[in-house]
Image (cartoon, rainbow, N blue to C red; front, side, top):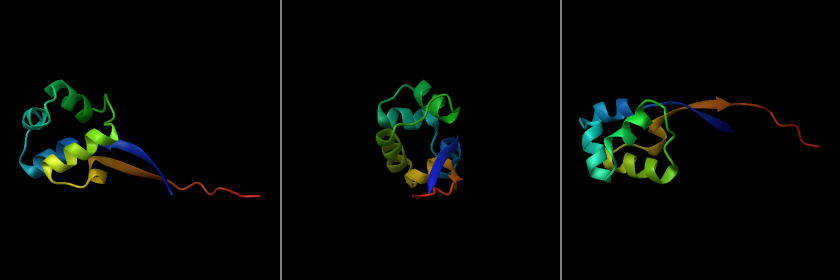
Length: 77
């Protein structure tokens, strides 16, 4: 099954964890603007960064984005 990334759910995960975007930026040594770019879907998180973010706020990496199923059946010869 293939997936496409929907909207970023980082802001929701931050609220659930009781953390702020500023706290996350400081924890990961990022500029806050970078975190806000992820939240506002201006930038897609690279996998390594997404793993670090998930670890910092205590969620699964797959919970950072809406995952849209792309159920296209592939015909094989």
